[in-house]
Length: 186
Image 1 (tube, rainbow, N blue to C red):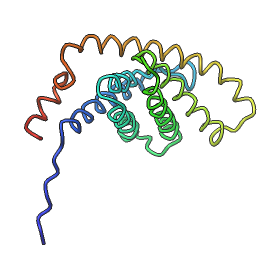
Image 2: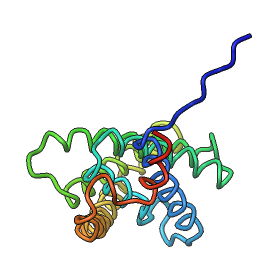
Image 3: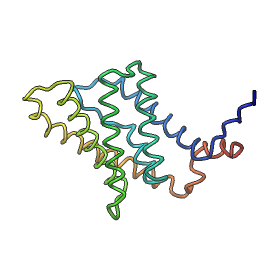
């Protein structure tokens, strides 16, 4: 029997893991906050995804967003629950919107954040209406939900933009402790 080859992590793998862990921690903290209106939360973990798409590209952002959903659901104990499905639908729609946003010239943190927030809310709404709560009155909530998505998308975009500006001088390859850790891994 042959010895399996050791798994090696690239610098990008470690960067994705760090960003996903940060986003998961923020998600877990935000889950503890009471929500005055069901279905509406600030989505502060999405700041990390927007940062990732602006600094490292769509592929990294997609990994961060999807890993966050899985890791947070396992951490919070709601894996495969309706909440997990809603989060996965929202994150998948947001990742798709970020991919389309790359095609728009001049898209920055604010634009990505608003696109992702609105897509996230739309993905969650469509899943909720189609599978979980197929009530004919539910579409009346959609404009209110989209307004909240727009507001939080703007707020998160401003935060992501500030983080990007603050870390600009650090460059793509040295802005995280993950890069220093991964130096010996590659």
